[in-house]
Length: 85
Image 1 (cartoon, rainbow, N blue to C red):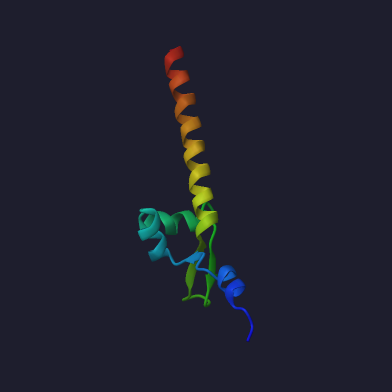
Image 2 (cartoon, helix red, strand yellow; image 1 turned 60 degrees about the vertical axis):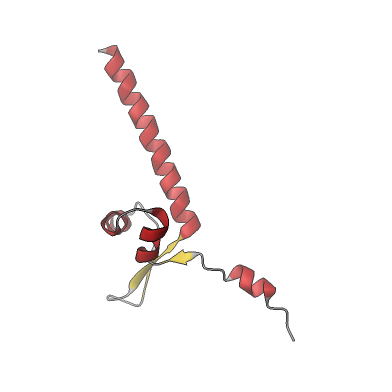
């Protein structure tokens, strides 16, 4: 009998539906959908026109972290510009 432990490790749930991402990350469904449409959040669509999006949870989290860092840099830059005036 083959050892299926390696298969289980590889196929662990890493892809989330939009609704699962909402619950997991605490971001609104609207924000996630808009981010996907704008190309900010990575996702794949399965099932054709009426299909659903799947989101890689690790890649999505990395994207959120990068967005947070970018926002922080912009905030600090704005503070510096404000202090100069």
